[in-house]
Amino acid sequence: MSQPRLEFDIRLERPGFTLSMAGQSRPGITAVFGTSGCGKTTFLRCIAGLEPNCRGQVRLGDEVWLDDHPVRPAYQRNVGLVFQDARLFAHLTVAGNLAYALRRRRREGPALDEVIDTLGIGHLQQSLPSMLSGGEAQRVALARALVAGPSLLLLDEPLAALDYGRRRRIMPLISEIPERFGISVFYVTHARQEVLEMADHLMLLEQGQCVLHERVDTAFSTPANWARLGDLSPMVVWEGRVLARDEAHSCHQIDTPGGVLSVPGEPIAVGQSVRIRIRSSDVVLLRSADSLAGQSNVFPVCVISMTPGGAGLVLVQLKTGAGGQFWSEVDWQTASQLQLTEGVELQALIRPGTMRRYHAVQHFFREG
Ligand SMILES: Nc1ncnc2c1ncn2[C@@H]1O[C@H](COP(=O)(O)OP(=O)(O)OP(=O)(O)O)[C@@H](O)[C@H]1O
Image 1 (cartoon, rainbow, N blue to C red):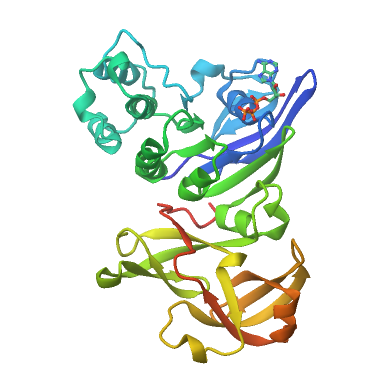
Image 2 (tube, rainbow, N blue to C red; image 1 turned 135 degrees about the horizontal axis):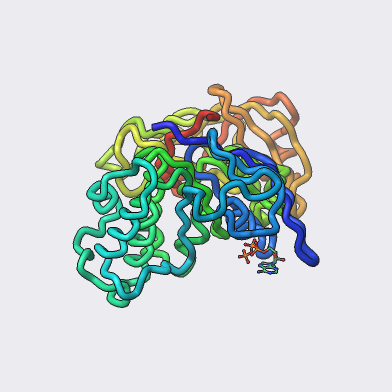
């Protein structure tokens, strides 16, 4: 299903704060990320038409929403909004909340049953909001937003008030929304895990400006971004696809840009897209693979570059035969013993169990 493109070039002045952002939506989920006060919520509010002093241009597909002054006020912008608190109508049951949204629908939207099924709220229909857990209430809030048939979904930390278990259960449901309902999503979060698990793209805001708008794997794998994404240790994030599962050893064969990795963990379906994070500290370098016979995740690699890392270490950039680049961090003594220089070929072992796997139900890896 095609997702109408949002284009914006907006400015909002407040005492001590200016939001100034230009760009366009990309298919799938875009995480809006950044430190507290950088303007994430304000950006969503400007797009939704909730900031009367916002100036500039906003359009969604052929519809002009803002042309220096509002052309379409908030109630005429077909936007679904979900906040940290569910904000359900307290006097209506779940079914009543959904029926309300259905009555206000202004364009063709998803079937009610499909939304209820996707979010797993069929058994809650007769409940009042006061009877719902935080996770249930957020699922109903998402369902209510979807039932209204929005052209764009804006989610402002919808999982922030939930515990880890509930967040984990809802994340895959949110991941499905863009493809299943043909809607682009902007998703404000502070949580890196939510970005890695759900988002296709990352928009990083600093002091009211967008300083990065990239695919998630590229954003997290670029050295210049590590500090600004919250003091990350050197890492790469690879997009991969499950080729096979080895039940006997509880692990998966995953095709990645670096080659086929063997990754342990809970079952994931063959064909499923996943992300793999490999930190520099997870990678051991050796001159020869002789002592590693039978070990999985050993790759012949070539040294691309060496730069001083943190804490007196050297950061070694490596490339596998398949072309995937990643990092290892060693002390200078080890670097000298291994005679590391650019162009040297050696073996890299990605230590089993250190790789972090994210489900990443992504379908929008291509630039849209
Ligand atoms: N209603 C308001 N009136 C005046 N200033 C505001 C208002 N709301 C937010 N601000 C200010 O605007 C700036 C951006 O706030 P915003 O809420 O968009 O940041 P944020 O990135 O969403 O923060 P957080 O992650 O803490 O939610 C901040 O300096 C904030 O203090």
